[in-house]
Length: 407
Image (cartoon, rainbow, N blue to C red):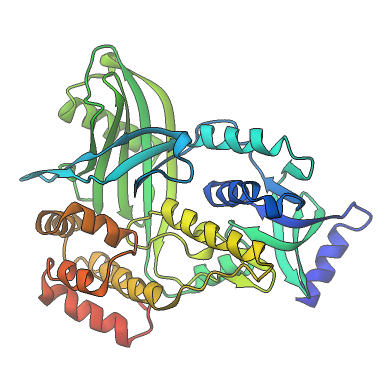
């Protein structure tokens, strides 16, 4: 680490160094959620904060969908919500009434604008567009190097997978899948959707490239987000995604290209892995996917971000190290996730059949709790009995008694 610091200081020689209480490295969902929670707390009002990202965050580049009960932390940003979801396979349609849960959508542009409007009223909050090349922790502070400048803070909250953490992930012999997707927000000329119902998973599409399904999330009778999603190890070309989306709309929504206009697009890649990401290094705190907050078997991250950023802020208020302890519950669900990755990667059972068994044999509310890592051991046992013991038990034993993320 001494050599790293020396190299960093050589890079930024004769350049300005700025000190802050907190630096947020990466202005995505995790970083901005943490910022918003800090801004809500009077006890943290006088903290100086620097937010660094390579992007200006001016477009709707992501759409976050999640389920929760009641009024959430960012309820005023919810663009649309549903309590009825539909699940499809070639043979089955399952209508899922998830009440008292709601499946909610937040558009990233609304999220970014809200954060900027709040922070511009605070003179101690600073935003910087720059490319981060180094992060680290030395003695009792942490640092970030961005565009050749070195910034220090008491804590750096980092959501970027770089440096040693990236090398560790790439070298690890763990299970590695990608959840990758492309979505179109479309407007149709004629009413084509029911905005009271969303397609949660449509597995009627081809499964030759691995687990593949489509979301259809209508917000009005003439507008919807349609997203093609894969669980495999290789992203597609833009042309392939577009062709698949077009074919899906024609076959299942009865819409030709002349019937709709694409108003926005989004594309993303999320690691699905049981690699144990480092949560912190002294005063460098990893958050979001970099901190291991993404669920390995679904890619869901939003609700874990809200849970863990709330915990971090509680620690900051108490002037304690903001390190989230994951404990037995996290270890339990790590085992479940590793088991499912074992089954999927080794092609022991198709994802569509697994998810159909889960949703057809259990209350949807229970499955949603399970996907949020919120079920009890009794509920877990009932859920695990929904899938073939002959397939899942040997996989679970393998994961339990071998290296937890060994392939």
